[in-house]
Image (cartoon, rainbow, N blue to C red; front, top):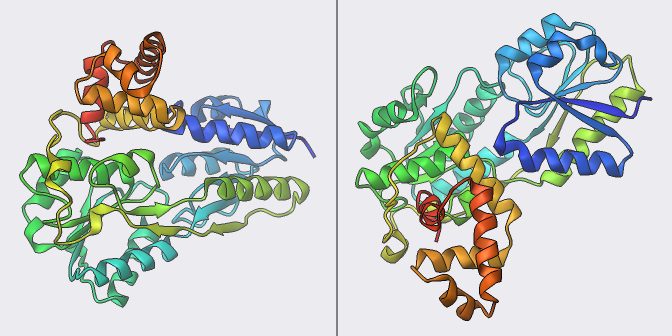
Length: 363
């Protein structure tokens, strides 16, 4: 068996921590991991062993179709089960069925009677399975979701998708977003339009992001055991390497509901928590918005509690000297940490550092 695995992925900021976790786990198991842009792989597939599975770390079903047609002899592993049954494609997926059932039961207990599905794309590998799971779970718990209540994001901007939803928003008790990124930006867009989540309607996401945990309101999401997921992914790849005649296999990893403030239907979190009211109007879940979200997610993953405490003090308008005194640190230590945080987020001033947090209402 060749101790090498090839991962096809774009150089996305949001994947940085995930890639690092993969590298560490492969290293512990004495497996060389190689990350290659998908298009580059297609140009020179002969540089890789056909007997080894190739892991495709994306949700673009169109490229997956290209990949399977161009390389019929390769076995491919994806991190979401595709809606199309490809003969040589295996998958490791979080169980959307479990999460959808837990979420809809929670929403029903909170008094939800009608919900919308927001910002889903036909081009995603998993979209049919996810839509089906939410519709089935909603029906089981007495929540109405019609076909017209699905707000698709294909070939339109987040702003356009939100504008269509906003026309009917008073008809819904809850909005189920395709992921945490869209959930966070929806809470932001709603606040800028004069609505408050969860007072006016509930919002939920999926993806278990740190931004979702720290923004106000905190986002209800699917809690992901990423280490277990990566272990299952690695085990599947090693099994396929040992068994060259096995062409496909699908594994499921459990996913549990983590309830945040965003689904406390009909209630308001402390008005002080909305005092910032997303002062930094700006990006939504556009391509730029995704990059900003990814940068913040990576920042939160890498920084510690002291750095976060410094940011919170900066938000309150404290100087470097005042922060040092309040946190019992050397002033030069505070200055150094601020400089490193600005570098991590790609901003040039303390004001821009603060504004990056205000953009997500992180307090």
